[in-house]
Image (cartoon, rainbow, N blue to C red):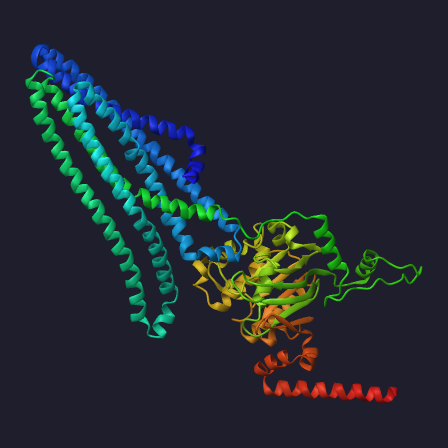
Length: 637
């Protein structure tokens, strides 16, 4: 409940106004039977018509006031609950934005959708019904029983006994239903997951003829939910019937006992009417509260599920640089080569004095046309639920004006490298450096401002092509967007009737796979970044488009570093540096020609993809180079 109070706190004034309006409504509802009793007791005997008219006018005024309070209370309550529901959804969304990949997978997509939509709806409805129906119940009970005692003590005890019996029974039913509701929410999660799998994977299901199997899965998830929902309905149907029974019993008891009390002149006949009205109002509110009580245990479970998301501490948080971490990052940045070897201080050629690492770094930077932008320094990574590392002691650098490529068999950890660079994951050991700083010492926003990323799955958002391109740069002009599209070989956009204003369906499903990839690449190119990461972003392109795109990219991002993660050798054959991964281990490093001579893993990948004549030509050229090198050695001897 602390979570709910936290979201109610900003609306204390609105909450107070809502409660006051509801109290006026309850007070008016109980005051009317009291006025009616007086009308009967006095007006029907000594007061005459004048007393009945004057009392009736008071009753009309109370009714209008109570009705106005009821309308105002309903409006204020709806406004309050809408604001609270909006704030809770915003809090869930804000929390999810800070989650790492592992944090998000802890909940799952289906469960996050359920918590954001269904769970918050239940909390919102329970809050509204609780304020309008549950909150007046204790007030109605206390005031009604008190008024009954004021009319006659014996009748007051009868009223109190009836109220206590119904409240105890309702509390027991709600307590028993709470456990069932916890299961219901997990069944809703399961239905969400199964439905999403069936909708997104409908083509696979049809292709493999698994329709009947999926129907059984759906039927089981629906049946589990239905069976538990029916159990809850049985409980509340029994309580509802019992309450109606008690309501009628209460009326009979009041008339029977009240008749005796009137007979002995302990009370007047009009008081019986008031007591009947009190009992009907109290039991009616309790009966209505049962329907709300149906939601209370469910809402409590939903609050705990929402709280689990909102109060989840992200495993990846913005860090503050310390002196030690800054020193270590600097040492790794300037004191090691791209392959992780320590740089030994050398004497100054002019003075002969031994140079410090900083002085050597400045000297290298002055003559280095390709300074480092990012660096993986002895990095190892293991997923939280894994038994062994995904990446082992990985060291390499991405340099400005150069293309670094990563290739390897499926499952070798290629895409994990991109996620580590973006800090969607954190290294288990070692460090990732950007411009000489450990990425853990930077804010995530600052880090990602330097990077443009094209994901493995080209995802487009609903809206227009221009809207999607401006995800990379919100201030991009039309000229800049057209330029990015031309570099990304997205000339098909010029042929569309609406051009940049062409509508994009959710996920970009109204475009082909190759078109989606090119639009995703154009989105990244609208941002002027220091490092461009392409995570297998050319897989859906034909070889001609792939070659044209790489040629255009080489010119467009010549002042930035480029990291390409690929499956095809043809995509990375001209890269300045190729990193070969296998089972998380670095198996080779160098250019295409160097790796074809020295790296067996790369040779196997290349042979499986290259045409026989291309491979024969390369091997002949390599043999000729080897012969020339051998001849040179002989001459030297």
